[in-house]
Length: 247
Ligand SMILES: Nc1ncnc2c1ncn2[C@@H]1O[C@H](COP(=O)(O)OP(=O)(O)OP(=O)(O)O)[C@@H](O)[C@H]1O
Image 1: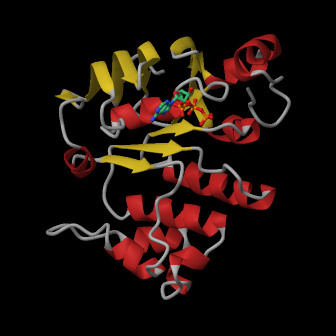
Image 2: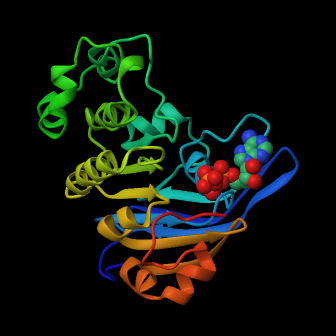
């Protein structure tokens, strides 16, 4: 991370317990104010739990401790809708598009009173969303639904985007399209990205945070991590020349 620039997000000693399981055990890291910080780790290490804790969506009954700050603001005690209004954009792993509604209706749901939605920007990034405005979201392909989920968040201004496994389950050509879009998005807003596809990580990531069993195992320059084949193999279970991270 550039030493002269303040992080956009600071996570300190984050601990999450759900259903008696101590899933995150004192996780600390920072997200740089530009570029893509990628959150990596084998299956089940706590990546999604981390994003959900940041955005206030830990399942009911779960216990969250520690500190998460976006600039001077402390996030953990604030309700999710407030965080989103303050510029924390979240694209969840399951995309959460409303299948029975059209593409245009899904987008309209993200509009806020008193704020002009950035349709021009969204349609410039995703011309297909404009063309398919009257199509039901449930009949879109996985890749198109992912574009809708990202586009919906970009209708409003964001200080930081959290994006959870956007390429999961997508065909290779669509993975490339999603990576291209995220690359363009990251030119104007910092991104904290959970991503298992190392080709996408290699293309997008500036900084990396690696989790292992609910703790931070490595942080630093993403290129450095990817150059260290032995390190990626021990932390991620793959050589950095190969494709996906697996358990
Ligand atoms: N609501 C829950 N109830 C019980 N256990 C949970 C819950 N949510 C997550 N876990 C457990 O916490 C651990 C971390 O899950 P999480 O989804 O954060 O991992 P992940 O790193 O995102 O994994 P993946 O790469 O498979 O998506 C897993 O063992 C998971 O089973």
